[in-house]
Amino acid sequence: MNDLERQLKEALRRSDPPPHFAQRVLARVAQENAPHSPPARLPVWRLPVMRWAVAAVIVLVAGLGGVGYRVHEQKAEEAQALAAKRQVMLALRITSSKLRVVKQKVHNAEDAQKSGNTL
Amino acid sequence: MVFSIALRFLRDRAVAEELAQDVFLKLYRELPKLESPEHVKFWLRKVISHRSMDYSRGARVRREVGLDDVAEPASHWKSGDVLLQDALRKLVSSLPDDARMMIVLRYQEEMEPQEIANTLGIPVGTVKSRLRRSLVLLRGKVQRLMGEPAR
Image (cartoon, one colour):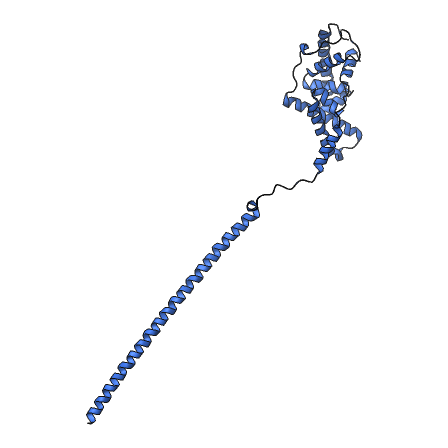
């Protein structure tokens, strides 16, 4: 080893790390070992499950709305049929009473004719 | 050892500490794979050498040091001369990355060319020739700086 190499060896001799170097390394190791914090909480309305819930509600409401509309329509038809039936019955009753009146008049007229023939 | 290799190579204490911390953190993760204290030592030298050279290439922290940038040391070779040592460190920092790392590993870590070759993953012949050329280059610069031949 010549002078230059000896000087290089002295110039490049090991240098101590800065104070507290080991503590800083250990702190980083501890940080690495720390349990991972949970991911940032999303607002409730942005949770994936909420999207499914909203979709389910929409489907449910649309389905129930359809059923409700059909029930309502059916009831309206039934009410219309009942009203028509009542009208028919009323008309029949009126017709029947009028027929009875006419029949009574005819009967009275026949009775009167019979009694006139006998006199 | 780890901090010192980075420091002598990069000449930046803050960066050297950062890289050394990274290497020890990596060591902590890789420790189960390392088989012996010798293996750990080899691994540390290898990783800090590559990290330092990668950093140097990426950040371009090295600047060419001209003789004008180097303080003039005492007029004669004297062991332990602080100015001479500082001048030498600056001259070493003017070497190309791979040659500089070889000089650091050879004269700080006192590694044999074969060990340097294993650490850097290059042929031993390349290590020997670059070390020789680096020494010739450094000797020339020292001679110009000192105004007297360096042996």
